[in-house]
Image (tube, rainbow, N blue to C red):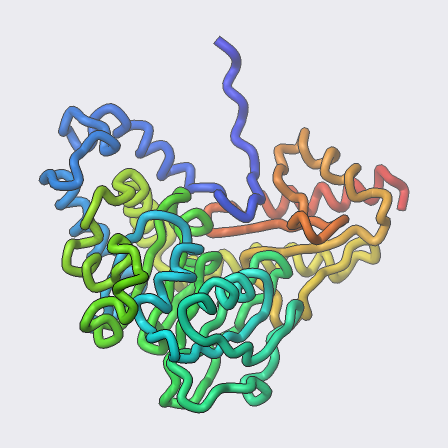
Length: 367
């Protein structure tokens, strides 16, 4: 048998690292979930094992995020990109307007897809910073204001929930930072996140939506796929058809890790800030590296950066591999750059080793 490879520090933007404790628990329960004699992969979504775990997952999600009672928690099959269509189909008529704050690739993609089902107004457009709310060109009578809370490519994150007029309803894509820090759910009409960044494996998306927004079913029922209807998913406990059951099992383990091992989202936020501060500090101090986003809008989850020596980009990636530092190449359209995604499961030691590699690289390359 080949010798087992030591686990690496995976800086991928997603699918991302999972906590070691979660993987170890899943491995122990792989053949028999809680003494059932079955893997949870094999448990029917109509059976007692799944129903018990789903109730536990609902309760834990609400507890960790402090979700008010007037919000529904839905676990949807597929990625967050599905919601680009499901949001307008569930919440808008074809003549309704959504104001989109476009701060990068993912908010741009939402506008393109949602624009097939309702009217879209680009309220502002930027990539390495977030324009002040006062400069947004909002539409009178618009149904919602939409934004992506953390754009993974340029590493731009909203430092706080934008302060919009009281009569405006916020929708947020929080795919890359939900569960990384506390969030006031009551400030949103809807927020959603794919699991593969901070709280589970790819293939499941969490949607948290205020109940009054989904009363009456899809506003464009003739266009909305039945499996994407929020009211039906709420009624059927996210199981109108077979849901991503094993993903939900892993998500429950990750949230248990956040709650019991880490100590909740306040502690998680402290750890994440410490990791980000360590890497940003070195990037700013060294003349051989530079950041991408403006400092006041820097993401704590995704840190894109460049080496000031253009001919050293590929060499640095190769330099990192034997140190167990992988998937540091920047997004494919950002040629010659790096990106360190340091989600919840990335330990502080991983970031420390990356900084050590950057220092050693400077020394060995004789900059």
